[in-house]
Length: 359
Image 1: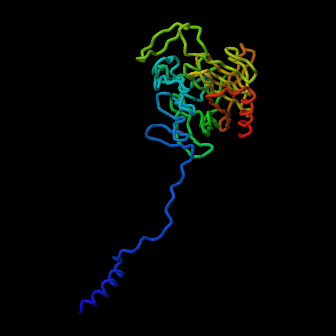
Image 2 (image 1 turned 90 degrees about the horizontal axis):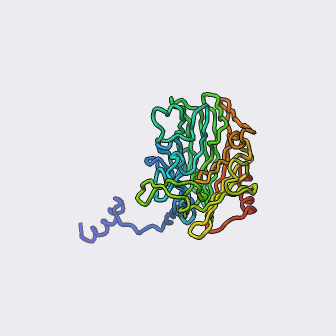
Image 3 (image 1 turned 45 degrees about the vertical axis):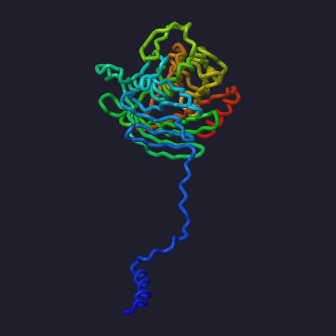
């Protein structure tokens, strides 16, 4: 065969065997899916789900065994200020070291079928734990990222010390935020599982947050805090220059006068590094015993309690909530966190109306 014949045949062979180098096809480039502004990221191995807004951590849903219930911890403002106390999980200097069961934002109650879910933590001696209940995380049912809101749906069980469950819990969290504002909506369904359930009237409940020293009201008693080396020390309240918070209710009450009273919402505000900072918690008309009493302590415990009246009213009222086996009660709350500006009561009322009209 002549040389020029080989030259003609070779391209044909290359085409048939697929070996010819072909020009790049003019295909449309793949466009990466745009990240949503609010991201809900499950980290199962770390027992948590992170919620990020514009790339910065807003909060995490956590469920370590030590705290005996799931919680949102830590919780940050839009600029990154932490509003939840670190102790006992991530202790910081100058914090109080009382009530180790006060962790982040949580929901439970102090007397459910004669079991204390509120005060339970690893600090309870083993020989006393038969009096306490535990809320165990079971599953992350759904997550959804969004530009306006992120969504997290989880399930838990409320258990007796013997492991038998009292309550099946389904909770839906909605996380949102705009400039200088962060919002958490919690919609929790509690279903009596294998037994009738009695939420007995108790002041210790139910939707709660424990805040940083700067949000506490000024103390009148000696404080036990952690020093710069995280060692407990006592300080005179006259030397407490950090606490500058003040409660204000939807009914116009302020300071210690809000404790035990009924209100649609309650605000705890302060001045942090010269700028306003605050947390508003909102009750919902669909909740039992509305408007509920507020278990709001000057030392930074801030809770709304639908299943308690007796202690708040010196015995004039009592509210025991009975949930028959198989039936469900739904609880709805909003937490509104602001910084850099101070909303007046009319503005908070507008936010409240938006909340109750949404659910």
